[in-house]
Image (tube, rainbow, N blue to C red; front, side, top):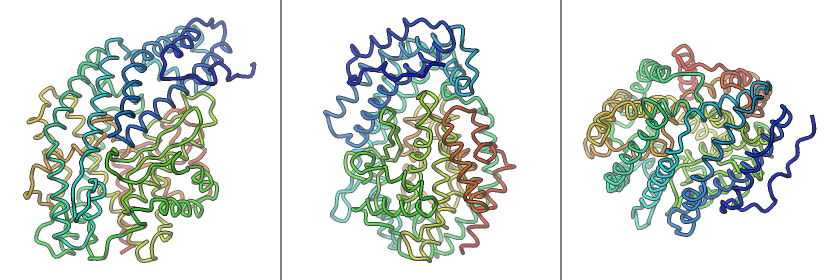
Length: 568
């Protein structure tokens, strides 16, 4: 087979100018495909072209996430959303159809091509021209949600703070101070409750229209196909939720009762759940104003785990690949974005000097390693694994790193931080089931607007709550708690992946403790495959089981509880 070339794309392509993009699409659509080798070269040229567009879109999205209050940045982002994406979507669909109809698709027998054809067929079956303006409107609405969140600022102790910065005060031992911080945060969120509900009502309407146009009964069915969930069903997720209720809730209830006793309280309040129950000062791994100290510490953790990982981590440069500190006008949350043309990773987060920041940095670094290990795959379309395995990468790094937290702390505080992380995992599963169950309800009920939605949220929230925490001071805060979960607005149904992946990551950690070299080798072998293999096969190559039934959940939760008990 002739060597693939990379000279199809002009060196100075401006992806903000559709007049430069359209001729390249037309060349791809007009090209004759006479044999399998022609198809492979055509795919490579298309992937190189798509890499430029992908990176341009990623940079615009990163910019608007970092600066939600910058009008010029928003203008450039919206120009891509409104003037570029709607025009290229039908062209991408035409390219997908060209591959599927070329007569050679079934002769592309390498695993990566088989995966690609399967995914493109699923996408092509959903595609409708009339959905393009609806998808543009959805993107604009989620951008409005980000802007609204970025403006949520408060005055506390003489300083203007983001809600992420305010959250650190919930770890303080002074209970009145915690109460004041929590109430201030809750009331600030509630100021935007009506606006948030209005945005979400519009999103529900647009998404219902998208699914109807595509011939799907509801948006859940649409998402299942568009996300390429070929290996499990909605019912599997609901069964997972049942298993979490059975396995995890008794443990969480015990933890809450113990916390209440340790704090000497008659009732736990929402501002009592983050403080150390033994009355010790909050864990402060680094100064909130010096996030680079966190970066250096995390690099040392990776150096202990694998000097090769530490070198990869060292590729991430401030101002180029990292935007870490929390500040006004910045979207909440954290993410890793892949820049496909330069083949670099970018990490976004809102560091406020808490231990959770260290966990987030380990998490997003895991995503970056995954991308770095797979970026040598020439075909950009299959460079990324399914989301369920992407999150195995990130959560595995959190767990592998937790045995080296003495980089930031004394030995006693390192044990305490590890214990908090493990307890967080036990508590995570019920929260994951809450978010996932709520989304199943949202998109399978037509009576899903504000009042009915609030009742459904409270019912599902109650199912996965221990009943120990009293929200009666500001009950509306509990009723609107889901507004802070950006996945519900931005990425419908993207939350079950965290649960599936956490079970995979716990197995990786279990393997790592027994044989670190082999466990890490297998994990990175799976990383390097990107999305060229089916999801269960990626799990198998990593040395773990793709299973989220009670058979897997129960033993792993017992392992975590045993580790937690051993830490005292």
